[in-house]
Image (tube, rainbow, N blue to C red; front, side):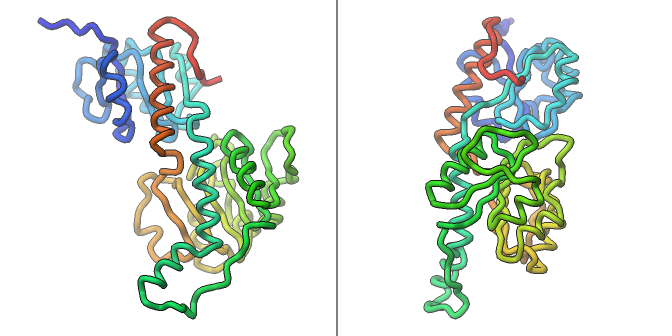
Length: 310
């Protein structure tokens, strides 16, 4: 009989499968979406999850040897931290692995919207050049950019927007020492902004906080960009705002439900959609893999985790 001498690590979600290749030299890697009857689940000592997906408590309770839940994303809103800690589990998450990539994506959406890149290409392919429906584009310089949540990604957005000569302001629940002005409230920020970029962390207190009032405050010439979590935006209010023209445009990389129903977005105007890929670059995935390996090595070596959830 062959005895397994490698520690067992479980990847909880299919879209984390890219991490397996970098782990199998040291660990016996099993896949949670295929392993419901795998006896190695009871030997699993580390569970790798994505922070936007609710932690499967039944899966955790079927792992009596589990000691670490390692989140492969910066956000960990899917983890009931208090519950996990009550079981004696250690918790880690990703830090500084894709801040710049997500910020680049947000700026790309702003450029794409205000310079009409998608619709311009459609006109060229349709043979309608010069196109009577093209609009005079807007310069980015002087755009009033509001950022909801000035964490690591929000800071990266602010720095890039400043380089583009935008007028940057922000709002968050806590004061911070920054060179950018903090608005009195989220609603005030939306009202004073041409673009509102959502980069805040999601928690139980702020689901749907970007609702009808905020969306209408951004205005008929304004743009909403969400690269944080879909739960932060009331999607029904967003669709209504775009259809009525009370909101000028939106760019979404995240959704309340993922994958999002395709039918929800059919024929919704002035919309840029991407499938939660803002932070998925070759470079960031390499950093995520390296950081995960470091946290696993620390856990199995009985050393402090590199990036623990505080």
